[in-house]
Length: 161
View 1 (cartoon, rainbow, N blue to C red):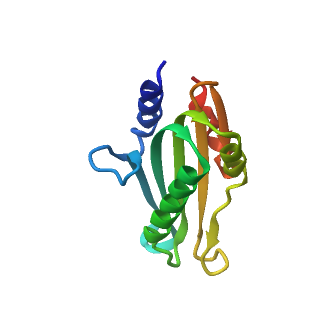
View 2 (cartoon, rainbow, N blue to C red; view 1 turned 90 degrees about the vertical axis):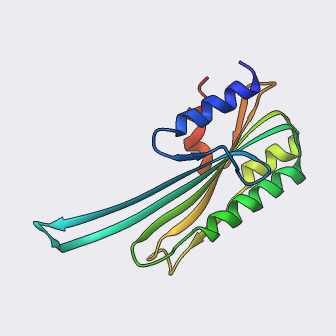
């Protein structure tokens, strides 16, 4: 399976629950995906609302030939900035998370270390109004290896190709 097919398979796995934007994604990304959920709980009647909750995720898919540290840092900062800009922290906000998925022919060793150490987290009003975090995962097509940060470990099952 070539790199483009891997990217399409990963994006396809998001199509069921996410709104996919392939037409005009923010550069340097090949596609974007957005998931927005609002839930409410009631006691017998809608007028007796117990709680409500908003949860959002924004995934960005990147395609790179040889992923270097500068290119990686640029992608991380763009995804984190966009995630924070799209966050509407309010009383019933639970989370707004950013996801960066990179498919690369090769990843240098310095960048692999940076990926593992990447941590972006922000809480709103001591997490009473929710939080935001960044998940990063990168797939090196040449070796078939996956590198991720701690929060991105839950995404490893995407690459069981």
